[in-house]
Image (cartoon, rainbow, N blue to C red):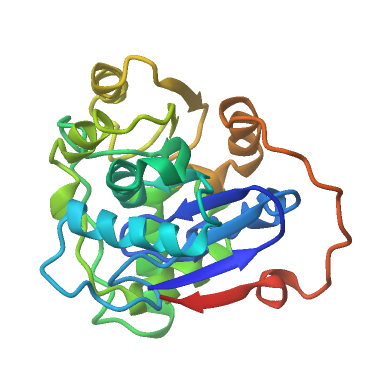
Length: 273
């Protein structure tokens, strides 16, 4: 399993969505790593990480992530764990498997709460090349991920193309289960959730999805980002960062350090477990 690390300070762990990679957080890492150590995983079977050794289940993938937290965090250290979509499901299971390693759990665009998922017809991509392939990616981003077509920029298309070429684990079958709600009952850390108002998978019943979360965790705090879709951290990063400032426990603020030039890749450290 490959992890990418930026910054210094209290640890903040990011788990991406289905058919994705750490790149789902491209608009967030520069801000979040200003005073945090950001650890952004490639989940098993996605991005650069190997497939799980056995047939994937949320519990099994969550256990792999939990072992990563035990190895990467300081001894007796705990992180603030944030998961998006499929990553929210895995974050719930990882937090249940390694409760001493998770200080808080925040879920973005969460499913697997036993609530019906929106019926979304996606375009086939693998049989296309060139402009036709990019057009299919744009259509799929508009139908599933991003509510405002104007926010589907060149970077979003580049991320979608890279992620789709490297995805080997199919996470969609888990989205209609109640697996996340069941895991949250075993998580001692405080729980919060963020959805885009126009989240396509949640569209049939976003209030029902919120209610299902709060049945599992009556203490959960919820924020809805107006006008945003499923990939809310990309489409509305400023609003998500403001919500995280409210929802995350206050970290110890280290002295702000000078940031090197060269973008995300120049600052990133990469480790494999």
